[in-house]
Image (cartoon, rainbow, N blue to C red):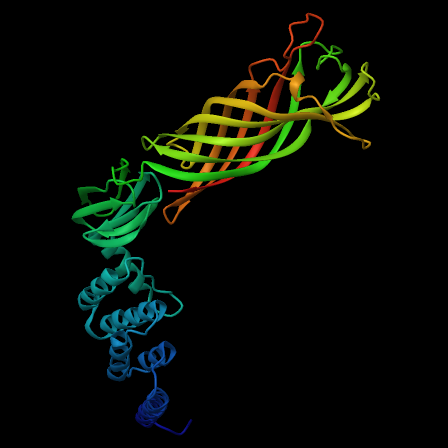
Length: 404
């Protein structure tokens, strides 16, 4: 090399560059043909990406058109196919042509992104600039919720709908739910900002006014006495101590729809009231611990108020009218029960307070409720001053199902 002239060295460098260029062209053609042969069956995004990097744009475009025309192509593959189309347009025809292709891609997938590890950083910048100019965002909430949301006649999801990309401009928005009057309104969505709408749907007359339901569940029963050691039942003895007991009951009811926030239940219920107490007997029966059973059939009417800010949550209140069908004391250590039906007042009026949660599905409704029932009348049926007044108290949890 030291003996070569400057002209000779220049000629050698030019020849070397030409050799390297020729070798790269051969390699590109070789790998391009290999990829083309591999994807004769079904093209893959990885194959298309390799063709694009090797400069085989025509072959890559052919495979991309095949992918996008195939209805079986997955959403993720279609997104990557659009990324490849925009990238090839950018590399071959410049930014303006890439923007036209990117606009088409964004109309299909408004949240489209280009991973900088696979695509030039300019592609993501094109997407972000175009999104700001052609899309706004739409948020829709409703009462009740969820409701179906339609934009220009096409379903776009259910409420609550949060910041969905929408083409900027004027649109027809429709919100609907079975059993409620649908709402239709015109909205204007500015580009680059979030447009929010809240819609309240009233119940329509086609909602069944009367449905039927059932409730079952456990309860905690006890009695409240006017004195700690008085006589709860005439002629039996004195109560020395008492505690609550667990029982089980159920009801059937009619569900009355009056309003979207106010409805009611009217039903018939079986329950077993009472407590567990230590009796000092004075009537020939052995003293000891007894369970008191007061078995009632009751009719009740409850009004329910639904809290709009807490979908599905309601408060309830109303009277319950009970008739005693049987009463007895049963010793916990085992013995024949003592029938005391004639020694207890037959009728009872109670106040019921409650709260619960309901969830509709398929035109029916699942209900979970908690109640506190307070008897308002004394259970003693004599007027002796030395006898104690005692009234039933109940806390219960019920699971219900309404067939509307």
